[in-house]
Length: 121
Image 1 (cartoon, rainbow, N blue to C red):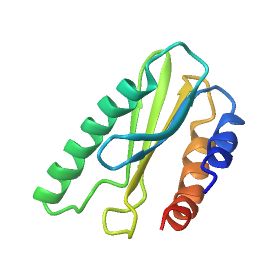
Image 2 (cartoon, rainbow, N blue to C red):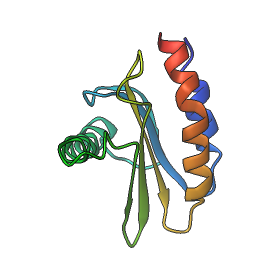
Image 3 (cartoon, rainbow, N blue to C red):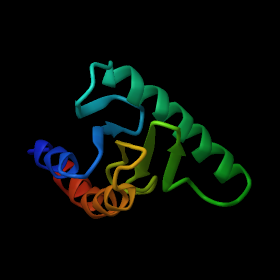
């Protein structure tokens, strides 16, 4: 399985800063960053926030969270879930600058998530 091809697709997005494919537990399977940051720590931290949103949404009857977007003055963090009932449950993270193409990041993540699940099955 070549997960690098999915990271390469994300790297082509305008404003790209970092990306990763994680197990739903927060363990980073593969990642990339244009900045000097501890991507393992960053992705695990955002994954915790994402999973808390999963739990709260389920408790109030909305089902598990599929996507989370956090806006900051200097960047945008997008997280996507492959689906909590999928055979393989993974989370994707992409970070772009605040003027980056977040729409393309979301579309790319939505398109590659099923392919990643298939590759990991």
